[in-house]
Length: 206
Image (cartoon, rainbow, N blue to C red):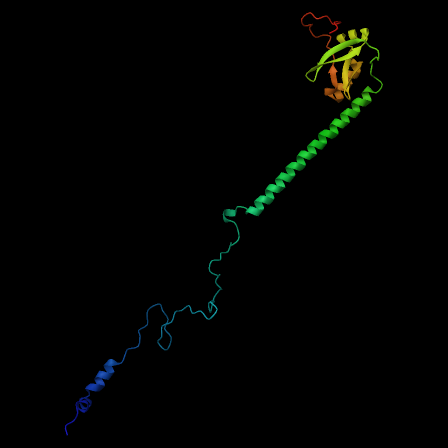
């Protein structure tokens, strides 16, 4: 019986040659990429379970930054801005209050000093009939004095001062002391050297 085609091929050695040609070659290494002993190509940065690298410094979580939570460009955040504004407003209120208290204290001290200067120095006469008019506080006021006192007021020898809403007649010397303590307390002190205006007599009652 004739040999089969397979037997003839085996005898000729062609089948062995075809098997050797069909065997795949091992993969060639790529420059720059490590190859393990078995020939398998694996990435150099292998990560075990959990997402952390096997070697080296732990990497920050995705989306996080070293300055996370801090305002950009070094500007204060909203809470700090409100705190600074509140502190500034509080300091301003305290400053205004201190100034108001200081002014009130100084005014009280001036009032007390004027009261000491005028204690027993008023020259007002209860039954005086002559009214001496003058301007004070944007209005025409008057104080009653005797005939001699009226002439003395017009010569600048007697002055008019105000205390607790009353107009008092005092000597020019006392009036100057009152003025030094509280300028607003002095109401009228005629300058005898001032030029006479409109030829108004000094003893005119008006």
